[in-house]
Length: 98
Image (cartoon, rainbow, N blue to C red):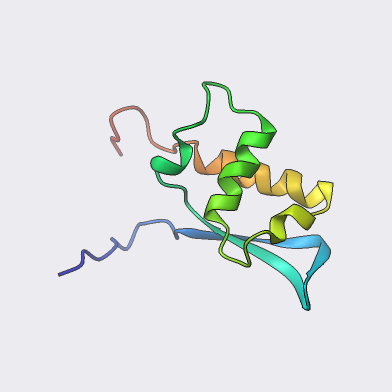
């Protein structure tokens, strides 16, 4: 039987409303959503990841049409990179104590 999330768990998705919506094919994208990355998806990160590495992780965690993120305006791309960086910052201390 699948394990249920505890009531105190944070949502696994996060969205950003684009300041500069993009057109990808026939679709206009106003908002982009991401799930939290898995350990496998961040294995390539160095000790101090650069912006390009955060965008690589974002592409893996993007819950939209593959390739659409390449059309992001720079302002929105920076916001996406900041979101991914935020996923990698724990709100708990080492050892996971509450």
